Image (tube, rainbow, N blue to C red; front, side, top):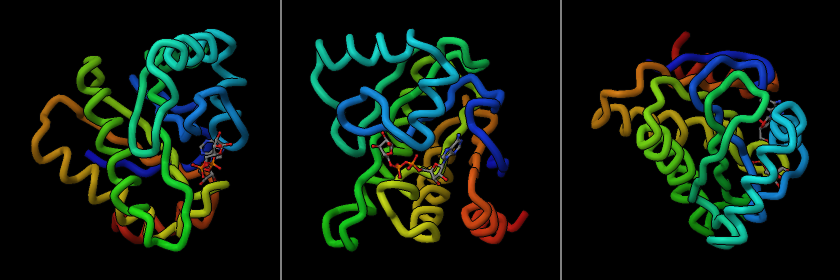
Length: 170
Ligand code: AR6
């Protein structure tokens, strides 16, 4: 089931919360900064181990760590595309970021997962276009998977919340 929530994802109760990270996995601003701040140093330490063993995380891919002090069991760090006008595979990479996060969550036994609006902040992806891609990717995934009971879209800014309200018809 898809649900819409407004507010700070670090306060969301879900088995997995998803981070809109960058390829370095070493933290940043926006939701990434908020997750690392609230979760504590254990998350960054695991991210550094992942980078040391596997290298950086390309756009569209996802990795999983502890959630540290957050109420979630895990954080999945995915990297959305930077918006460059739409001709650089941005749509597919954004859909992949959602789908690969969902696959990883299921692999780790999650029943619930919360997503921020990946790429719609610093990475400048147009918000409505991103929301349509996110909702479609999640719906497609849920057609084939029965283990996730709830997928939460956590909207921090009002504009995204209004877009999701309209698109999800809630
Ligand atoms: N909870 C939920 N959503 C949030 C929160 C929060 N606490 N804070 C911001 N948002 P952004 P991006 C929303 O910029 O565009 C970082 O520096 C925000 O309103 O966090 O994918 C990374 O390290 C927006 O809708 O991520 C990367 O370098 C959405 O989160 C880069 O930003 C995404 O905004 C990634 O850029």
